[in-house]
Image (cartoon, rainbow, N blue to C red; front, side, top):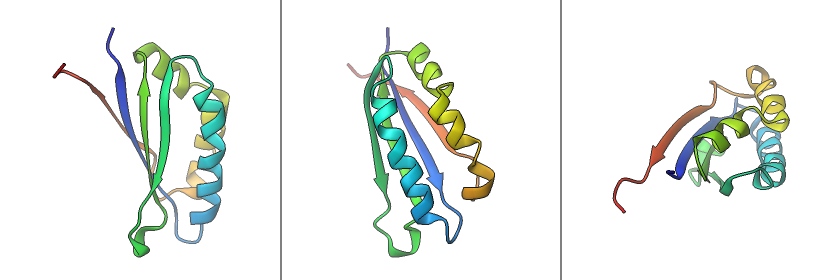
Length: 100
């Protein structure tokens, strides 16, 4: 069983930065309580011109747990608002540790 590391990028539309930030902060509690969530950390760009750029750094016990997260109601609810809030759809890349 391999731990799945995830980088998910979120880019808010101009003028929607604070609204997106609040939505993303609202995902932290429910996601951290999900089965298989090792960590779910939200980061915001420090570049003054990119305050609407966010990255989630996540680790999941396995792919099945991560898939469950993608189908969780709180995630689906946020993604349902993506067209209104985001410049582009959330970018997701997954990784496994091969250097143990």
